Image 1 (cartoon, one colour):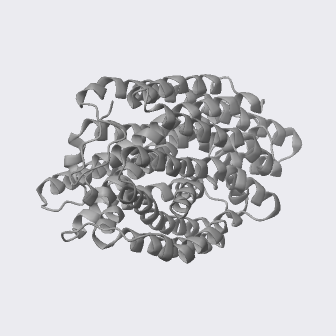
Image 2 (tube, rainbow, N blue to C red):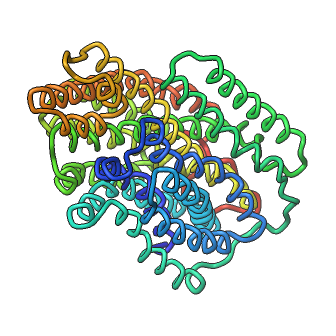
Image 3 (cartoon, rainbow, N blue to C red):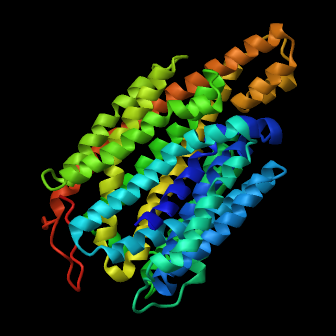
Amino acid sequence: MAVLGIPAVLVMMNMSVLYLALPSLSAELEPDGPQLLWITDIYGFMVAGSMVTMGTLGDRLGHRRILLGGAVAFTCASVIAAYAPGAGPLIAARGVQGVAAAALAPASLAMIRALFLDVRQRTLAITIWMMAFMGGGALGPLVGGVLLQYFWWGAVFLLALPAMALLLATGPFLIPESRASASGRLDAVSVVLSLLTPLTIVFGIKDLAVRGFALPSVGVLVAGLMIGAVFVRRQRRLPNPLLDLGLFGIPAFAVSVTGMVLVGIVLFGTSLLTSQYLQLVIGLSPLEAGLWQLPTAVAGTVVALLVSGLTGRIRPAVLMSAGAAFAVIGPILLTQVDTNPVILVSGSFLLFAGLTPFVALGTNLVVGAAPPERAGAASAISETGAELGGALGIAVLGSIATGVYGSYMIGHALPGVPSQVAEAARETLPAALQAARRLPESLGIPLAQTARDAFAHSLHVHALITIPLLIVLALLPLILWRTTPPQSPSRPEQATTPTPAFD
């Protein structure tokens, strides 16, 4: 169980550890606005686009084999990312990391599904795994802050090397192999379609956010939706589909996966902005910013253990819905953020704590809904929901925040600032601060302050957008929780796995 927790920590830490490195990375590589977003979210999209394929491959080839192969690829890509000479190579390395990470998470979760047949034990095991998963995301900024205090930005990628070495050294001896007893041929066309769908759709959304309503951007978005429709239609016709759409006929499965997408959108979109806010607006060092985010990691761990113990007395749907409703307090506080880090951290703390029940309990429902021979595919769908949501949160909400930031800068343009400098400052806050340092103090100081005000305004708008998403998330479990009969949480599984009750 301890070895299986290593991939969970690393997959999420690698997604969030970069947040604190963005200011120093931007100063050295000088990416433009779209490149900066691709650096942060290409990893999540490659994870989301590849995870179903890797989960299905694990069912057919063996989850341990896929896990260890992914660890080797992840290690190599991390070294390349650490020493990337420019934005383009870094984006490419992050993409390879994403494909490798897609092999890690569903394989480890599927092996937990095979190891723990008793429902109560499996619930606790998945809760521990999810604590590692969420802890990696929350601890990423802290660990990254420590590294950035003493080393260059590439050091955050080398963090994975010791853990991957431990996994490769102990995995072959401590982790049993697990695979489906029978499997069909992997459909290569479905693999390509599953990867192209999220990438094309999000590319269109990002282009719309940067360039406004333009025919090429709309065309790319429509093309992505059409590719997704072709993928779904093909899965319905294949005897051995890459994505088993029949699993979505189980209400617990469908609601949990939908909720995981929404949770990822809210959490990752918010984390991207708050990590930059602490450094670039409030002026904290990377280490100080990481320490300020430590309470969020503690909140996730404590709440995950608490809700796991309460499932025997309180229906999971009630815990999930109540947590999402409680989380609304978080973005309400974020709308009041100024230069006081206490308000920012308190809002993030409440948001993360409120969404933890959905993440911990929803994952168990998704994994338990599938028969053992489809454990890898179900695990992959669960993690795809979270990773796709995270990537969408960074891309969509990040693009909206970038658009709001740029509009604010246009509306508050300063006289005397050269047009080229003003145009660069409208791209991102790091670009604006870098441009301000090159100007005389009479122009540079007001430009830097205007850019910080613009970023604060974009965070306030982001918080307002997340409130209705959280309300939808709170209502989802209550609408559908009565659609399946209850089952005993302590009954071991028989040869045919029962459908887990959402209530």
